[in-house]
Length: 255
Length: 307
Image 1: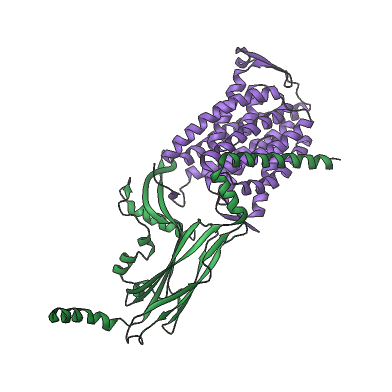
Image 2: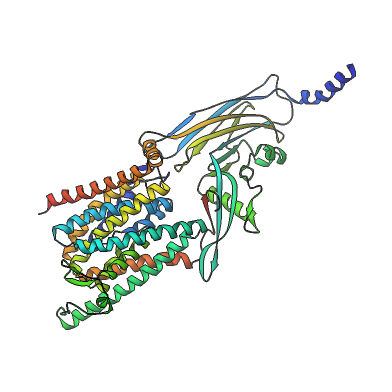
């Protein structure tokens, strides 16, 4: 029995020696985003500190990675090919799950901040966040389709990677801004903060941002989905009234 | 000033939308076309998702057509009987079109089909109108006077059974050709998201032999109902009608339509037709170019699973 405890202690001791008990404490400037008629994008401030039980170990520095992820769902990617002189959709690939929005901000160059294995484990970088395992393959070169998805969404500002975008002060305080685009999908956005040392994740926390349509926007969206027939007829009524009103107005000004 | 659209889920400049509405409304009032063939590509261009653009474009066409038809009514330029016959054909064609549309969207070929329809129909109609109106203008210039045309040119259209009197148009013809024209237009309305005025107007003039005076009003009258039907169908089946987007477009559109109708009175019929022909050809050329030029981006993304 004594031997067993000793063995356990020995096994645990290197880990204990390496771990100064570093933990993240963090906050968001806002935990909800209301999409109203004048919504044109939002900036979220993510800030926090590294809490320590003991002074930080010598050698190697801590790094911070922040990810913000929008609601995910399956997507279909199609490729155009020239057939009979006309460019048309030909091959298609279905990707299991891809986030509608994904931003990664780090405190340094990604290759130094995060190791390959921990990236795989925590699905941190953009390619890892796209779940393309068991891809329904209609085309031989499905990786090209996944790359296309990344490229297009990056161009649209939906996916982004900002190396060095997290300001880290005195190995303790950190802050960064993540901009949400004007074209935004409703849902729960997950903010993940990773603390790494020598490429290994030593602590992680999750926060949630509620993104919801509000006011008139919410009312219209809900009516369109809950009472589609009524909504369609209402849109006709509005169209008819507007058409008639303009006609009546102009008739009055007729010389 | 930006506006977040609840159904399209994008943020766009409100003035750009009002501007698009006004331009399309102006043309609608001027030529008697709904303007769908212009508004749908323009909405694509400013980043509205295609499904929302098609459905909401139809809703906007309802408003500008009503505004236009009211202006035409005062000039007694609507043949209601002809309008109703065209409409019956329109609903048949529209139902067929919605069925074909769902088949094609399952195959991922809607874009191609819509583009090909644009090129084919706009090109055909545009060329025919351009040629005819150019010839009319040249003839009038050479002779120095307006040519006297025969009121009735008897073609195969006039030998068909089921004849009916259309008093406002001064016609006594079979109901089959207008039913057929209505059906084709209804089909295009569902598939291309257009009212179909650009094909209806020339078909009425050249195929049915209706006087230009009543063509515009009657075409607008029919378009109101076909696009209204399309709007409700889209709202129910795919929830893609964006009222806020429609309202902004309508705001510009109804005013444009009134001005257009006013300007239309001052223009001569052959001048008007040649202008419409040029516009139709320009859109046809633009859409056709997209099919032939090597695209900048080969890939496209649609949310949801493959069928």
